[in-house]
Length: 293
Image 1: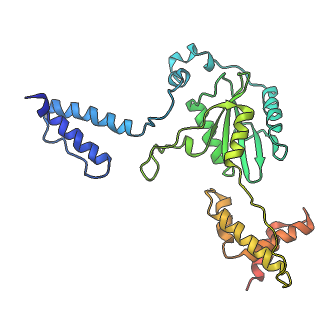
Image 2: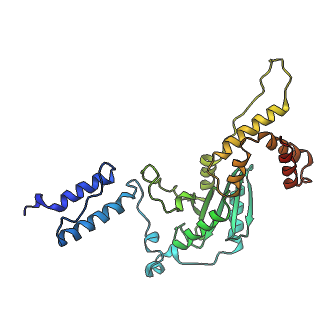
Protein backbone atom coordinates (compact mmCIF):
# COMPACT_ATOMS: atom_id res chain seq x y z
CA UNK A 1 0.00 0.00 0.00
CA UNK A 2 1.32 3.40 -0.92
CA UNK A 3 1.65 6.04 1.79
CA UNK A 4 -0.90 8.31 0.09
CA UNK A 5 -3.43 5.47 0.25
CA UNK A 6 -3.18 5.16 4.04
CA UNK A 7 -6.80 4.68 5.29
CA UNK A 8 -5.91 6.45 8.54
CA UNK A 9 -5.37 9.71 6.63
CA UNK A 10 -8.96 9.67 5.38
CA UNK A 11 -10.23 9.09 8.92
CA UNK A 12 -8.18 12.02 10.24
CA UNK A 13 -9.53 14.37 7.54
CA UNK A 14 -13.09 13.28 8.33
CA UNK A 15 -12.46 13.78 12.03
CA UNK A 16 -11.19 17.32 11.41
CA UNK A 17 -14.47 18.06 9.61
CA UNK A 18 -16.26 16.65 12.65
CA UNK A 19 -14.35 19.01 14.99
CA UNK A 20 -15.34 21.92 12.76
CA UNK A 21 -18.99 20.91 13.13
CA UNK A 22 -19.61 20.22 9.44
CA UNK A 23 -19.75 16.41 9.57
CA UNK A 24 -20.47 13.54 11.90
CA UNK A 25 -17.85 11.61 13.83
CA UNK A 26 -16.18 9.04 11.53
CA UNK A 27 -16.18 5.37 12.45
CA UNK A 28 -13.10 3.20 12.79
CA UNK A 29 -14.84 -0.10 12.14
CA UNK A 30 -13.43 -0.48 8.62
CA UNK A 31 -9.82 -0.24 9.82
CA UNK A 32 -7.60 -3.14 10.73
CA UNK A 33 -6.62 -3.60 14.36
CA UNK A 34 -3.23 -2.00 13.79
CA UNK A 35 -4.65 0.97 11.86
CA UNK A 36 -7.45 1.39 14.37
CA UNK A 37 -5.00 1.69 17.26
CA UNK A 38 -2.84 4.15 15.32
CA UNK A 39 -5.84 6.24 14.31
CA UNK A 40 -7.24 6.33 17.86
CA UNK A 41 -3.96 7.74 19.21
CA UNK A 42 -4.00 10.52 16.62
CA UNK A 43 -7.68 11.34 17.23
CA UNK A 44 -7.12 11.51 20.99
CA UNK A 45 -4.29 13.97 20.38
CA UNK A 46 -6.50 16.13 18.18
CA UNK A 47 -9.19 16.28 20.86
CA UNK A 48 -6.61 17.31 23.47
CA UNK A 49 -5.00 19.91 21.22
CA UNK A 50 -8.37 21.45 20.40
CA UNK A 51 -8.54 23.04 23.85
CA UNK A 52 -5.05 24.56 23.75
CA UNK A 53 -4.62 28.27 23.19
CA UNK A 54 -1.94 28.71 20.50
CA UNK A 55 -1.27 32.23 21.86
CA UNK A 56 -0.66 31.07 25.42
CA UNK A 57 2.76 31.51 26.93
CA UNK A 58 4.96 28.53 27.73
CA UNK A 59 4.11 27.02 31.12
CA UNK A 60 6.66 27.46 33.86
CA UNK A 61 8.84 24.61 35.08
CA UNK A 62 7.23 24.94 38.50
CA UNK A 63 3.72 24.38 37.13
CA UNK A 64 4.88 21.29 35.20
CA UNK A 65 6.60 19.56 38.13
CA UNK A 66 4.18 20.60 40.89
CA UNK A 67 2.52 17.67 42.69
CA UNK A 68 5.22 15.33 41.36
CA UNK A 69 8.31 13.84 43.06
CA UNK A 70 10.38 16.48 41.23
CA UNK A 71 8.64 19.37 43.01
CA UNK A 72 11.35 19.47 45.70
CA UNK A 73 13.89 20.42 43.05
CA UNK A 74 12.05 23.63 42.11
CA UNK A 75 13.01 26.50 44.47
CA UNK A 76 9.67 28.28 43.94
CA UNK A 77 7.78 25.27 45.28
CA UNK A 78 9.76 24.72 48.46
CA UNK A 79 7.37 25.51 51.26
CA UNK A 80 7.99 28.04 54.00
CA UNK A 81 5.74 29.26 56.80
CA UNK A 82 3.53 32.25 56.04
CA UNK A 83 2.99 34.31 59.18
CA UNK A 84 0.61 37.14 60.09
CA UNK A 85 3.25 39.69 59.05
CA UNK A 86 2.91 38.58 55.44
CA UNK A 87 -0.86 39.09 55.53
CA UNK A 88 -0.39 42.49 57.13
CA UNK A 89 2.11 43.45 54.43
CA UNK A 90 -0.37 42.54 51.70
CA UNK A 91 -3.00 44.67 53.43
CA UNK A 92 -0.63 47.64 53.61
CA UNK A 93 0.23 47.39 49.91
CA UNK A 94 -3.43 47.14 48.86
CA UNK A 95 -4.41 50.06 51.09
CA UNK A 96 -2.11 52.30 49.02
CA UNK A 97 -3.68 51.34 45.66
CA UNK A 98 -6.79 53.54 45.85
CA UNK A 99 -7.95 55.55 48.86
CA UNK A 100 -11.59 54.99 47.84
CA UNK A 101 -11.28 51.22 48.26
CA UNK A 102 -11.78 49.36 51.53
CA UNK A 103 -9.21 46.79 52.60
CA UNK A 104 -9.54 44.44 55.56
CA UNK A 105 -8.40 41.04 56.78
CA UNK A 106 -10.74 38.04 56.77
CA UNK A 107 -9.65 35.10 58.91
CA UNK A 108 -11.95 32.73 57.04
CA UNK A 109 -13.41 30.25 56.54
CA UNK A 110 -12.30 28.59 54.34
CA UNK A 111 -8.83 30.22 54.47
CA UNK A 112 -7.50 33.62 55.64
CA UNK A 113 -7.52 36.28 52.92
CA UNK A 114 -7.17 40.03 52.43
CA UNK A 115 -10.39 41.54 51.06
CA UNK A 116 -10.28 44.49 48.63
CA UNK A 117 -13.63 46.22 47.97
CA UNK A 118 -14.47 49.07 45.62
CA UNK A 119 -18.14 49.83 44.88
CA UNK A 120 -19.59 46.37 44.19
CA UNK A 121 -16.24 44.88 43.12
CA UNK A 122 -14.86 42.52 45.75
CA UNK A 123 -11.58 40.66 45.45
CA UNK A 124 -9.78 38.37 47.83
CA UNK A 125 -6.02 37.91 48.01
CA UNK A 126 -4.71 34.51 49.05
CA UNK A 127 -1.11 34.02 50.13
CA UNK A 128 0.89 30.96 49.05
CA UNK A 129 4.29 30.02 50.42
CA UNK A 130 6.16 30.25 47.12
CA UNK A 131 8.40 32.65 45.20
CA UNK A 132 6.03 32.63 42.19
CA UNK A 133 2.21 32.28 42.15
CA UNK A 134 2.10 28.75 40.77
CA UNK A 135 -1.48 27.41 40.64
CA UNK A 136 -1.00 23.89 41.94
CA UNK A 137 -3.93 21.57 42.59
CA UNK A 138 -4.06 22.44 46.34
CA UNK A 139 -4.03 26.17 45.49
CA UNK A 140 -6.73 25.67 42.85
CA UNK A 141 -8.86 23.84 45.41
CA UNK A 142 -8.49 26.77 47.85
CA UNK A 143 -9.46 29.27 45.14
CA UNK A 144 -12.53 27.23 44.17
CA UNK A 145 -13.53 26.99 47.84
CA UNK A 146 -13.29 30.78 48.22
CA UNK A 147 -15.51 31.39 45.19
CA UNK A 148 -18.03 28.84 46.46
CA UNK A 149 -18.06 30.29 49.99
CA UNK A 150 -18.54 33.92 48.89
CA UNK A 151 -20.47 34.31 45.58
CA UNK A 152 -19.95 38.09 45.74
CA UNK A 153 -16.22 37.67 45.14
CA UNK A 154 -15.34 38.72 41.58
CA UNK A 155 -11.61 38.01 41.55
CA UNK A 156 -9.08 36.12 43.66
CA UNK A 157 -5.43 37.06 43.64
CA UNK A 158 -2.89 34.35 44.43
CA UNK A 159 0.06 36.18 46.03
CA UNK A 160 3.54 34.66 46.15
CA UNK A 161 4.46 35.46 49.75
CA UNK A 162 8.14 34.56 49.41
CA UNK A 163 8.83 36.95 46.53
CA UNK A 164 10.11 40.46 47.15
CA UNK A 165 7.53 41.99 44.78
CA UNK A 166 4.62 39.81 45.98
CA UNK A 167 3.90 38.69 42.41
CA UNK A 168 0.18 38.03 42.04
CA UNK A 169 -1.89 35.90 39.66
CA UNK A 170 -5.45 37.25 39.36
CA UNK A 171 -8.14 34.63 38.73
CA UNK A 172 -11.87 34.69 38.02
CA UNK A 173 -14.27 31.83 38.72
CA UNK A 174 -14.17 30.89 35.04
CA UNK A 175 -10.38 30.62 35.11
CA UNK A 176 -10.48 27.70 37.55
CA UNK A 177 -13.51 25.98 36.02
CA UNK A 178 -13.40 22.71 34.11
CA UNK A 179 -14.62 24.20 30.81
CA UNK A 180 -11.88 24.48 28.19
CA UNK A 181 -14.00 25.91 25.36
CA UNK A 182 -16.60 28.67 25.50
CA UNK A 183 -20.25 27.78 24.72
CA UNK A 184 -19.62 29.00 21.15
CA UNK A 185 -16.76 26.57 20.73
CA UNK A 186 -14.07 29.23 20.99
CA UNK A 187 -10.86 28.89 22.94
CA UNK A 188 -10.98 30.05 26.53
CA UNK A 189 -9.22 33.35 27.16
CA UNK A 190 -5.82 32.95 28.73
CA UNK A 191 -5.13 34.09 32.27
CA UNK A 192 -4.09 37.60 33.10
CA UNK A 193 -0.32 38.09 33.34
CA UNK A 194 1.22 37.75 36.82
CA UNK A 195 2.15 41.20 38.15
CA UNK A 196 3.48 42.71 41.37
CA UNK A 197 0.69 43.01 43.91
CA UNK A 198 0.02 46.75 43.56
CA UNK A 199 0.02 46.64 39.75
CA UNK A 200 -2.23 43.57 39.72
CA UNK A 201 -4.76 45.31 41.98
CA UNK A 202 -4.72 48.50 39.87
CA UNK A 203 -5.19 46.52 36.67
CA UNK A 204 -8.05 44.57 38.21
CA UNK A 205 -9.80 47.75 39.33
CA UNK A 206 -9.29 49.41 35.95
CA UNK A 207 -10.73 46.49 33.99
CA UNK A 208 -13.29 45.04 36.43
CA UNK A 209 -14.66 47.85 38.62
CA UNK A 210 -18.15 49.09 37.65
CA UNK A 211 -18.55 52.49 36.05
CA UNK A 212 -21.33 54.72 37.33
CA UNK A 213 -21.84 57.45 34.71
CA UNK A 214 -22.55 61.00 35.81
CA UNK A 215 -26.13 62.22 35.71
CA UNK A 216 -27.93 65.53 35.99
CA UNK A 217 -31.48 66.77 36.32
CA UNK A 218 -33.24 68.28 33.33
CA UNK A 219 -33.82 71.95 34.07
CA UNK A 220 -36.43 74.25 32.62
CA UNK A 221 -39.29 71.83 32.02
CA UNK A 222 -41.45 73.70 34.56
CA UNK A 223 -42.96 70.59 36.15
CA UNK A 224 -42.78 69.70 39.80
CA UNK A 225 -40.18 67.08 40.58
CA UNK A 226 -41.79 63.76 41.60
CA UNK A 227 -39.20 62.27 43.91
CA UNK A 228 -41.14 59.02 44.24
CA UNK A 229 -41.17 58.42 40.48
CA UNK A 230 -37.55 59.45 40.21
CA UNK A 231 -36.56 57.00 42.94
CA UNK A 232 -38.62 54.23 41.34
CA UNK A 233 -36.97 54.82 37.96
CA UNK A 234 -33.51 54.77 39.52
CA UNK A 235 -34.44 51.57 41.37
CA UNK A 236 -35.71 50.03 38.11
CA UNK A 237 -32.44 50.75 36.32
CA UNK A 238 -30.38 49.35 39.20
CA UNK A 239 -32.47 46.18 39.49
CA UNK A 240 -32.51 45.64 35.72
CA UNK A 241 -28.74 45.97 35.49
CA UNK A 242 -27.89 43.95 38.58
CA UNK A 243 -30.36 41.12 37.90
CA UNK A 244 -28.73 40.61 34.49
CA UNK A 245 -25.25 40.16 35.97
CA UNK A 246 -23.70 36.75 36.62
CA UNK A 247 -24.29 36.66 40.36
CA UNK A 248 -24.69 33.33 42.10
CA UNK A 249 -26.55 32.15 45.18
CA UNK A 250 -28.73 34.34 47.37
CA UNK A 251 -27.63 37.62 45.73
CA UNK A 252 -28.81 36.44 42.31
CA UNK A 253 -32.19 35.26 43.67
CA UNK A 254 -32.66 38.50 45.62
CA UNK A 255 -32.16 40.77 42.59
CA UNK A 256 -34.35 38.61 40.36
CA UNK A 257 -37.12 38.67 42.97
CA UNK A 258 -37.07 42.49 42.93
CA UNK A 259 -37.85 42.71 39.20
CA UNK A 260 -41.24 44.41 38.90
CA UNK A 261 -41.17 45.66 42.50
CA UNK A 262 -39.02 48.77 42.07
CA UNK A 263 -41.20 50.86 44.39
CA UNK A 264 -40.56 48.45 47.29
CA UNK A 265 -36.82 48.66 46.70
CA UNK A 266 -36.90 52.47 46.55
CA UNK A 267 -38.98 52.70 49.76
CA UNK A 268 -36.61 50.30 51.51
CA UNK A 269 -33.55 52.36 50.55
CA UNK A 270 -35.27 55.53 51.74
CA UNK A 271 -36.21 53.91 55.06
CA UNK A 272 -32.68 52.66 55.70
CA UNK A 273 -31.25 56.09 54.79
CA UNK A 274 -33.49 57.84 57.30
CA UNK A 275 -33.04 55.44 60.22
CA UNK A 276 -29.45 54.26 59.62
CA UNK A 277 -28.86 50.98 61.49
CA UNK A 278 -32.07 51.03 63.59
CA UNK A 279 -34.04 49.15 60.91
CA UNK A 280 -35.11 45.51 60.94
CA UNK A 281 -34.66 44.80 57.23
CA UNK A 282 -36.64 41.54 57.31
CA UNK A 283 -39.59 43.10 59.12
CA UNK A 284 -39.54 46.25 56.99
CA UNK A 285 -39.38 44.26 53.72
CA UNK A 286 -42.25 42.03 54.84
CA UNK A 287 -44.36 45.09 55.78
CA UNK A 288 -43.79 46.73 52.40
CA UNK A 289 -44.51 43.54 50.47
CA UNK A 290 -47.81 43.03 52.34
CA UNK A 291 -48.80 46.65 51.64
CA UNK A 292 -48.39 46.20 47.88
CA UNK A 293 -51.85 45.77 46.27
